[in-house]
Image (cartoon, rainbow, N blue to C red; front, top):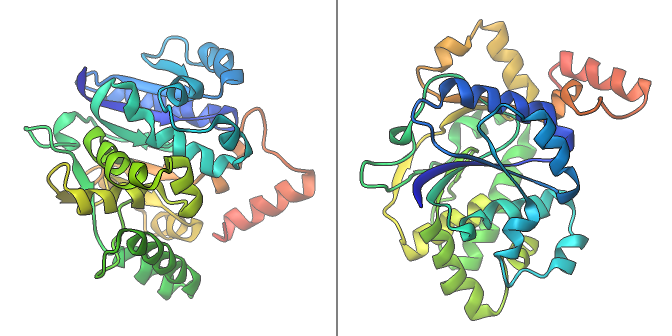
Length: 295
């Protein structure tokens, strides 16, 4: 078993984004950390074809779920993809391939060399994203996006209440995140099993996997808390990216603070595989909104 691995859950719409991520891993993964990717069973052959030549360990989502003995497969089949993918990502630890893993999304891109020391201490304790998201919330208020703060407070309060924790509302993101198997195991053994529920049930109650991990870490302290800021520059909204572009912010400048960048797929629909969805008018509308920074 290795100490640290990279892992991404993907699917065919994100194929081009995943190939872009794999290319950046090949370029900057100076220590050769193993890179695992899981995809729907029906799409495995497609990814094998397009990732040929990349050092990527491909598997199916079912490979992960088979290790999750208390996950009801029928229940999973009824969940929307936005929820089922959170369950698959959070159950990867059960395969026993690494002590910890960097959970990446397909729209991530590395922009500088990286190694274990960027994600964990020399003793193997992962760095955990932990702050109060003031940068994002202040930016949202400045843009007149009060809903961003409302959603943040609602999501934080929901999971904190389930754990009985009072106090400050924390953000445990954004992705990518470093997750340790000991934290997921403590959540399973000390929260889920005593209530006779699975992680799928937990996600249905509160669909924010990063908060489940973060609150479990605070509650059960399976690993030491080593807080850090975001590993990647994440453009949550198009108006953030638009502002940086107007200010002339470059990847080289960002690489002094971040290992990579995430461009939300919502305004990168031209990278959808095999093509951007929707009719001519809807694609035109999205293009205009992207240019105006409204996606």
